[in-house]
Length: 115
Length: 113
Image (cartoon, rainbow over all chains, first blue to last red; front, side, top):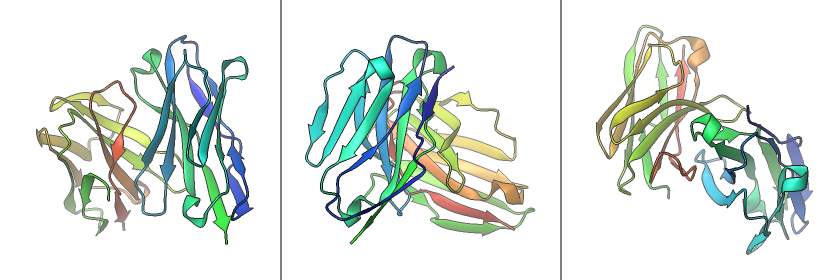
């Protein structure tokens, strides 16, 4: 069975601080994909990134960066110089063949960025 | 603005009512999904349609009835719901069924009295 754990349920930071959201996953598959989604107060989940299990290169997109480490089964997400608009719930997710290729979500981390 | 449109945004219904939630996308996606999300929880998959055919039903009670009239539209018919069915219902679409890269609507917030 697969599982995604986001141990941080809520994080509060002050604008311009850096913040890292943790994600730990479990799967028996060797081929899988990891995702991060953002859910702002408006409700829709917004796709941020997909990373396959064979690509451990870190990725940077503007103020966002992702650190994938297979050795620790982690796929952490860092926001640099946080802004109020980053306030949202962030979900880490996993997809693999054993789950019928359906997404398994973590419990989510609510990030509050205060001005 | 999201490219997946859901209506209505809010719905209040009694336990004896029949109502429908609607979802539309014009991205040419061939897979469409219904998710249910309770407060402070992740989305839970309900149904998946692939090429307009129901491919996954996650043991959802029959009081929820999905329908995919064409490749752009997805409905969720509601009948005899319970108060515990109150939740945010999210529609999503994707290019294919295996990508994991889903495009979500803003959801329909349902309250069952």
